Amino acid sequence: MSRPGPRTRGMAAPVWVLRHLQVAVAALGRLYRTPLSTAMTVAVIGIALALPSVLLVGLNNVQRLSAGWGGGTSISLFLKQSVKDTQAADLASRLRAWDQVASVHTITHEQALTEFRHLSGFGSALDALPDNPLPAVLVIQPTAAVKQAASLQSLLLKLRQLPQTDMAQLDLQWVKRLNALMAIGRRGVLVVGGLLALTVLLVVGNTVRLDIQNRHDEIAVTKLIGGTDAFIRRPFLYTGLWHGALGGLLACVLVESAFALLGGPVHHLATLYQSSFSLHSIDLSDVSMVLSAGAALGLAGSWLAVGRHLDAIEPT
Amino acid sequence: MIRFDNVRKRYPGGHEALRGVSFHLRRGEMAFLTGHSGAGKSTLLKLIPLIERASHGQVLIGGHNLARIGRRRTPYLRRQIGIIFQNHQLLFDRTVFDNVALPLVVSGYRHQEIGRRVRAALDKVGLLDKERALPITLSGGEQQRVGIARAVVHKPPVLLADEPTGNLDPELSREIMTLFTQFNQVGVTVLVATHDLALIRSLDQRILTLSEGCLQAADAGGAAS
Image (cartoon, rainbow over all chains, first blue to last red; front, side, top):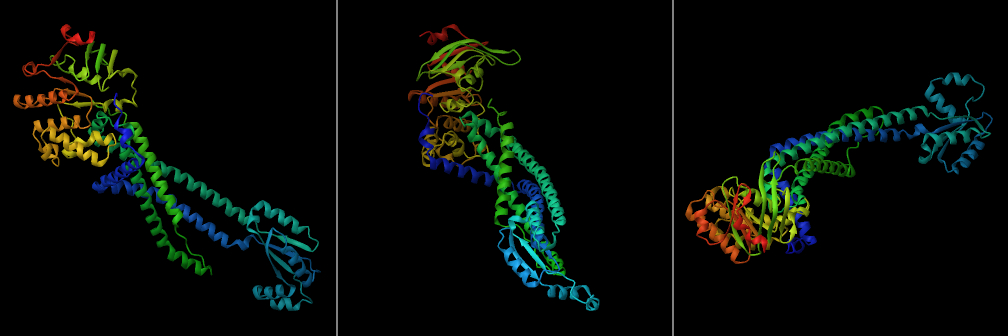
């Protein structure tokens, strides 16, 4: 107590970093020397992290798919029968200037008739009519920002008030339903993810607790010769961190292989629907998120175990 | 350096191991602590590195009142004290070198410094050629000397030993005790608990005798001055 401790002399910043690096590598080496138990713990963590990841990535795919149907949120503006094609084109160019409107596609009387004749199979019945009963139609794509249900409604209202408008139709119902389903899906992933995160926490906590028990003597001796709590805690925290990070890595591999397996059949199904949709697996940002989530959970789990069990060991 | 002022220690359950112990060991002084088994020798030693805390009275180490040293500062107190146990308290999954290096590692010494100091300590106890050995392959006397090297490697101002010769033959015991007197000669304050009366009488050092938790009157002399 009377002499200055060597701590101030020896613990310059680079040395401090070096110590952490040494402890981290040593903790990894310790895992390597007990491959079976490490593999089992990492497998449990990996599966626990893979499940919510698969769900989340799947949900993102559904969202992408429905965004591909963005045409579904377009507004069909049926003009009055009296509005001529030129007037319709005028109106279309005026609408294009609105900042809520992304694009306008004009369907003339004639085009409408051709299309209807083509798709409905009522060609001969139409021929019997004295003149074209179909109005000109403007198909309006709202901008991405307007695709929220509320602003879509206000755009719809503005379009309905145009004098040329006979009817403005927006099939919003299915968008709402899909959004509601997706919200439930997200909430579900959150709940499942929360439960599985708790599992990871407990698994790592238990592993570290056993590790602490196995190294009881070492901890007692280290405390006796003046090892601070932080010094004694450090290797166990790194053990938890590595377990979590390795589990995260395994989770990424599992998700990637799951989507690789699903990719073929999904593509086949998509072709049957004349869609170019293909599954997106996890990207780099997802990988880094799963890895850091694993590492953070591992660290938190070991911190819990260390806090509870390290204090109980005192030299005698 | 080590001052006890009317120190009592009562364990949970009511057993009173120390009943008012007072003495003063000056800086650089050496003393043997003797007494029958259960007289309180181990308890007295454990109060110094705060393995146990006194129930009453004051323990001062280098002028610091141990009652004021909390949990967080305890490690820094222990780094000032080298402790040697009868059962060595070595780590059997590490080499002799790693065992002796431990006090330097926890204090954050640099790598080169650790190597230099560990070899100096092993040389001092005559085990320089065993640095790569595992403790389990060493004899009892050698293990004890590894324990001593570990206790002195960071040059603590205070050295405590609890029955360091408990399991050794008289020849080895004398060797170990001679080591302690050598450390004392370079200024280390040394307190050794032992019941090997024949040996310590021949070494001509101060002797504190504990009996049922009390020091015998003549031994407390230093406390008054």
